[in-house]
Image (tube, rainbow, N blue to C red):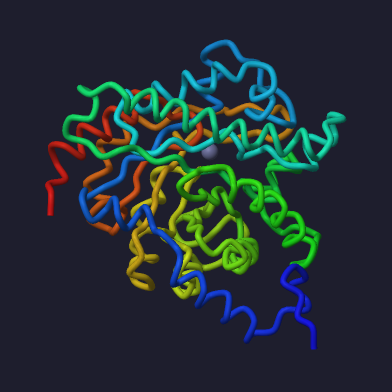
Amino acid sequence: MQLSLTNPRANTVGEYDRKLRLSRTIMHDPIDTFLAQSPVMILDGALATELERRGADLSDALWSAKCLIERPELIREVHLDYFRAGADVATSATYQATFEGFARRGIDRQSAARVMCNAVALAIAARDEFWAAEPRRSGRLRPLVAASVGPYGAMLADGSEYRGHYVLDDFALTEFHRPRLRILASSGSDLLACETIPSLREARVLARLLPEFPTLCAWISFSCKDGEHTCEGDDIGECAAELDRHPQVAAIGMNCTPPQFITSLLRRMRARTDKPLVAYPNSGERYDASSKHWSGEPGPWRLGGHARLWYEQGARLIGGCCRTGPDDIRSLKECARSDISSP
Ligand SMILES: [Zn+2]
């Protein structure tokens, strides 16, 4: 029988296991390498929030991806600012960059692929510019570039990434993610950041695609609705237990989730996995998908004030999501220096 490597319906368990074994032998895990030398990895903060603060108009279904086409130099500046604030990772502006989203704007697949690669190239250029200055290297490791992979719901641009319950089946979801993973896998990024994933089902689809790109590893991070569940309602401990089995999933956690839920979520994940946990909450404000704006007040907090507690619960990659900025990342860096000591 001829096995198809691209049609998940034709894949057998044996075929999946074979690809899994292959990935174990040739995969490089930059998170593991980094954490062997540093107790914690500081992620960046929101990209869109910073772009808007600098005058970019993102009230659009393409969101920050719109800026990739119109003002790419602004994105590079934001990446640089986060490195200056202390980020060890830049997450590329590809969260909402999808073939389907660009097609709605009359952008063909070839051009869309180029825009996605350019987004990663902007983050790499910012990292290289930052790292070229000798004094900046003092006391820190060379930062990484993570290619952001948003959920299917982010392409819909209707807030589905905070609800889940997609109507499409696993096959269609796999077909949605595969071509973009293929582009980002060859983009020169150090790893993938699969983020704001609202359900275990979508995380499972992503994890099962990874062995098709055996040199690659990823963190998978859920959007959560409370201290126990993903936005779709999966038990977060179950999510950790299932993803724990995938060698290319280098870290598991939650993002774009209100900060008050993080400690509980981490505790539940920690009980089911030894993988490094990733936590980058939003500011606690609420997203209104119809107006594409955030409302409410941010909590009276700075990321750095929570980092020690989250670290104790197993978080090793800590940063900020929507409505956080370079000041939050600076406070995290301070905390990492003063409160989280070297092992
Ligand atoms: Zn967010």
